[in-house]
Image (cartoon, rainbow, N blue to C red):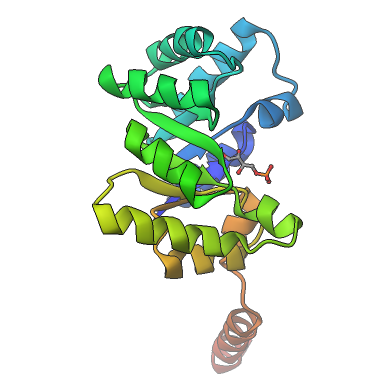
Length: 219
Ligand code: E4P
């Protein structure tokens, strides 16, 4: 399973990269705003900076919502770096634009997926990734993991190569359950990724090993 980090924070991207487990980065307009990035030139420079840190794909989201504008904005984003994947919202014009980008060999991530039907449409249009938002479904008392399971079944039934990029991941158990269900990728905040490291028995066991070693060495 690939691990993407869901942030526009360069220090956190670097930390995940240095851990040696990072396969890519996803951003969205809210995450860019959180880092205080605004204005076309700053946004473009920030995407370039992210591409310099990671070895993998970098999802850059369009702001446009009409077909012509999504295409124009996506073409500009795709030109920035070969790692850029154009992130397009799940709307009618977005699906049409994904079909266009696919025909041009430009990779896409269809975002804001909340139903199996939306994922199926995006896959038919040729999306490289679909991003089902599991945390936001959980927030409204709907099981986000069931969506991952349903999409996995549908894609496997027909051999769609579109990758399931589980998004809106909030904690380590989301990651583990997505792995059990066969999501191809998770995108998560750094805290959820590093949360996988933690177990009290590991901490206790290590403390004991070090104490025993010190005792044997007469310290
Ligand atoms: C996906 O690519 C989005 O950036 C993201 O996962 C949204 O997560 P949130 O629901 O925690 O904002």
